[in-house]
Each structure stands twice: as C-alpha cells, then as structure tokens.
Amino acid sequence: MIRRLAWSVPTLLFVTFLVYIALRIGTNPVESYKRINPRATPAKIQQYIDVNGLDPNYVRGYFRWLVNFVTLDWPRSIKGSREVWPQLKDALANTLRLGSAAVVVGVSFGLLLGVYAALQPGGRRDISVNTAAFVGISIPPYVSAIILQLVFAVYWSRWFGSTLFPTSGVYPPGQEGFNLGLMAKHMVLPTVVVAIQIIAVYARYMRSSLLDVLSSEYMRTARSKGISERRVLFKHGLRNALIPVVTIAALDVGSIVGGLIITENIFSYPGMGKYFLAAFGEGDFPLLMPWMVIIVTSVLVFNLIADISYAWLDPRIRLD
Amino acid sequence: MTDEITLPTASPRKMAYDRFVSHRAAVASVFVLAILVLFVALSPLTARYGVNESVQAPPNSFLPPRANAWLGTDDIGRDLYSRLIYGVRVSLVIGLFSAIISVTIGCLVGAVAGFRGGRFDDIIMRVTDLFLAFPFLVTLLVMRNMLGAIGWLRPIIGELSSVRFIIVLFAIFGWMGVARIVRGQVLALKEREFIEAARAVGATRWYIVRKHLLPNSVGPIMVALTFSVVSAIIGESTLAFFGYGPQAGAGATSLGILVGQAKGAVNTGFWWLAVFPCLVLVTIALAINFIGDALRDATDPRMQKDS
Image (cartoon, rainbow over all chains, first blue to last red; front, side, top):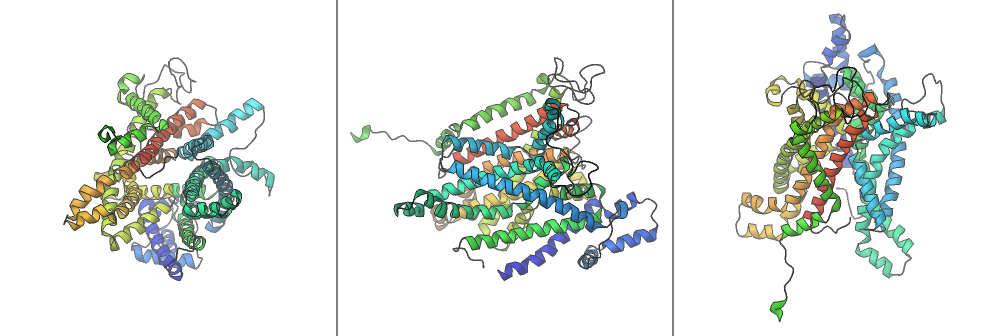
C-alpha cells in the first residue's frame, strides 16, 4: 500500500518528462513564441526560454521547468502573455461541474438499467437495454452533440417558437454574475452528450457483473437459507456485483475526460477541453504543461483509487 | 440397437458458425456492411458525380436533397451522396489497414509477453496501462504532432496530412489493447493441460505458439480485429472533426471530413450535411460492433448465450 503510494511520485515525474519531450518536439515552443511575437528581441526570447525550461538539453530543461513549476513560478502564456493559473482554475472548475453532473447522471442511470436488464436475462427488457447500450457505445460524442445542436439550436425554435436549451457557453452573452438556473440550463445538453456514453458503458458492465454474481453458488446458498428474494438481491447480489464496476469506474477517467474534451468544444463550453485544444492549436507551451500535469495526476490518482477500492471492497484481495 | 443412435455431432467450426448465425443483429450487420462495401467498390457505377464535380451550374451550394442530388449538396455545390461513397472508401481503408497492422503487432507482443513473463512482460504491460488510461484524443494529438515533427521519419510514414500517416498513427496506438487481450488469453492457456502435455513430450516453444496458442486464440484476435477497425474509423473522424485529420489529396474526402463539415452546417439548418454523414458513420460503427459481439459469443463456447 505504502509502496504503491511511493511509486506514484516517480511515475508522475517520468510521465511528465515524456510529455515534456513530446510537447517540445511536437509543438516547438520556441518557434510558436516567435510566430506569435514576431518582433521579440533576442533578449526577450532568451528570457522566455529560461523561464519555461526550454534548454536545448532536454534533461536540464525539464529540471529547470520542474523547479519553476513546483515553486509556483509559472511563466505567462505566449498568447496575450496572461497568467496561466486563473485561466486553468476557471477551466478546471467548469469541467469538474460538467464532468461530475455527467458522471452522476450517467452512472446512476447506467447502473439502474444494468440491474433492470440483468433481472430478466434474455427477456424483452434485457434485449432492449442491451441494444440501446450498443447503439450508445457506437455513437461518437460529436455525432450526438451535432444532432442535439441541430434539434435545439435550429429546429426547436422554428417549430415551437422558443429556445428550450441553449447550445453554447455557460451563460448567455452579456450575463454578469452567478445565476444557477441559467447555468443549469446551459449544462443540460453537454451533460446529456457525455452521459450517453457513460450510461451505455455502465449498463453493460453492471448487467454482466450482476449476471455473474446471480449465477454463483453463494446466491443459491443464500436463497436456500430462506432469505427473502429482495434481501438476497440487495445484500448479496448487488454488493458483490458492484466490486468490478467500481474498479472499472476509477480506471475510466481517461475516456470520460476524452468525451468531455470533444463535447466542450462543440458546445463552446469554457472547460479543460476547450482550453487544451486552443492551447494546442497555438503551441502555447506555458499553458499546455500545467494542463498535462493535472491530467496525468488525475489519471494516476484514479488508478490508485481503483486498486485501493478493489482491495477494500473485496477482502480476499491483498495489495502487496 | 445402440448403433441406431446417432449423436448430433458438429465440428467446432460448425458450432461457431451456428452460434454466429443465431445472432440476428450480426447477420443483418453483415448484409449492411456488404452492401456498403459493394457501393464503395463499384464507385464508378454507384457514384453519380466525381469527387470535386458540382451537380449543376451555380447557384448550387447548400441545395437540399433533390432529384439531381439525392442527399443535397455542400458549400461549393458538390453532391453529398457521391462524396459519401468516396469518403467511406478512405475511411474503410484507414480502418482495415491500421487494424491489420495493430493486430499483428499486438499479437506478437502480447504472445511474447504472456509466454515469457518476467521483466519484459512487466514493462510492456505498465506502458500499455498508462497509455490506455490517458484520454485518447490528447495522446493522439500530441503523438501526431511529435511524429510529424521528426524529419527522418517522413519518408517512412508520410506527410502529416496523408492517409498513410494516419494509418501509422493508429497502428502505433492500436496494438496496445490487442496485446493486452492476447496476453490474457496466452496466460490462461499456458496453464492448461494440453499445453503442459505438449511441453512434456518435448515440443519447442515456437511449435507450441504456432500449433496450440495461436489457433486457440483466434476468437479473441478476431474480436480485437473488428473492434480495432471501429476505433480506427471513429478515431479518424474524431481527428478530422477537429481539423487534424488526413487531407486525402485535392478535394478528396473521408468520413471524418464530411462529419466535420456538419459542424458548420448545424447553426444554419442545413440538416442534410449533418444527418447523412453521421448516419453512415454510426451505421458502420454499429454494424462492426455487432459483428464483433457475435464473433465473441460464437468463438467462446463457455460464454452463456445472453442476448
């Protein structure tokens, strides 16, 4: 357990090093600086290279970057020369809001549908849930996003005379201050798009996991002891069926983030995804690295959570 | 009397075939895909216009579906129906080739890792776990730019916007998932009695891999192949959607480019530009997924039939 935790720090360093190299080769940060600031003096460029750790020697450059990063001495973005943290903080907050809404909706509906299907294996409910889940998996998020936009941005107002759900941003243009109702309204469509994928995936996991459990020996034992069917299902069935699902849930962050990136972009939702694609398009190294660190860290943390929760839920498994 | 009793015997292959055929959605999917492939293969007959040909003299842009353009026209008056046929052709090529390459690499790496175990296995599986845990789009974009920037690779993998580059890119990613599946399969088979027996009579490692491990892994490998095709096709259209896809020659197109066009068409209400490419993409993905699912049921006798 402690060893797992201790290992995650070198892993984090190693992965960020790889990301650093990949970004330096792929986006060529010095060139993108010169492209956006064509009249920069050599001294200015040298200063940019220094604060970002863009030393020609990759290892030395990485450590320079790391020191600046850890001491919170973050360089300003290339485009507009703005502070990185305020932008990143807003993007992170927006994405967490959208992501958690989608995960809550998606996981709860997915699990419910999975249980609903597994209670009658081979029955009509089962087949319809299964088929629907299959369709859900086969629809890429941008396809559902485009279709929803088409319906709500164009045709809804044409047919019914008023817009039901707005299709871009967090607030209507010109809105000042906090307004929960408006914010929720703007989040409906992006949440639906991300949730469709999650529902489809979890319905399938839950169904097959519960079917496995239901056909196991201890379920028969529990029934033969005369426990009520409801109690058998909740106390023995669901609990055990959730073990693999929880693990998969924690390992699934990557694909959820992927779905968020695509969805945010289509709905012009100012979150991490939009931030990344904009920064990547410009080759804006000072913006990209902190973003990458956050993503890498969350992937590693959720992997760790998966391991720990697995051992915690299933006492037969011991972490070495 | 006993010699009168005939037991219904069937070869494993026949049994697998029967199980596949009983999966109705998969059989329908095979037909749908066959029709699509026919349309694409016979594109000189089925397409009504050239890739870059406009359906009529201007004004011809954004025409809704009509007699001389069944599925409407795009911004510069080209026939969407014909362009869909050309686009599906490029997408199928990308899907098939990158799937074949990645399944080949994945099988080799997975089989070696599973069979030998040890340090090699540890490292390979750590790396694949890490890559697969990362958001797919981010890795793809970063790797794309990195590979494109390395000068000496260019003669091998082609220009950043070529179809060949996209195939190589997906092959580099695709093998990991396959390797994990094959490794799992090999690990499970390794402990089985017939492998032990083969080893006991002195079979070489290579013989065991060739004669026992690979034939017994055909099912999972086929399933991995179908899912690789889907993920390459969807991956291509995702990249193209965000403008990082292949630019397949002058005016040529791919499913991703066509779906990407829909982005601009949405707010102006040119619904045909959004609906038809999306429909084709989802149909292809769904059909191949159904086939993969049926293949899994068909080739794994232990799985109880559950759909």
